[in-house]
Length: 273
Image (cartoon, rainbow, N blue to C red; front, side, top):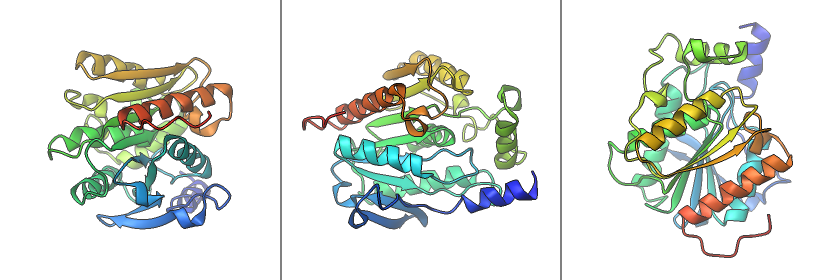
């Protein structure tokens, strides 16, 4: 990796907040859960209904403003609180830092009753989708506190070199994995046990470089008998509900909002989509 690219990654790694134009600053609060920085929107609603999101960025970057705009849109239209977990990323922090941060933050939220059983959603896009699945698999070992819904948006699930179709993905995988066994379920949750997972809402895009990961996940979840709702868009690219303003992106958001409200039993009238 060049010095310029390494520095550009470092610049985008710090915990971010939603722009003032997106969210009333009185609703935004930074907390730490098991020492992991977490940015909340409307934390007062957390016990009733919360979306906990693990952002994408190839294990190299933090949450950008498009991710914040998406999360705020889902939060507002679903009627929930939202929490963005700022896990540590490469090249400064290598595997398993991101996984450990995500898991420990979620365990802190559940054990301290910040979020309550049946009243929260675990969400992730891209690399964060892989983390969310790996965290959900690990939560079963601790008993209780599992999310009502696992919401995955074009997730990156398999870091194996032979399956990476672009130099950027290979570079990101090499940096984060740092020689670790890429069949480790914390790096490749497709290798993990799918039985007993909560219901899954999966968003896929036909133009996503990682579509094969979602296809394999769909097969494994169905084999394990996990309740699964797939929203597929032929023209959608990677993380398209977050990164695009297209009709396909808006349709995906509506599907995600419906899934959140159904899972959390939010019977208030759905705001206009």
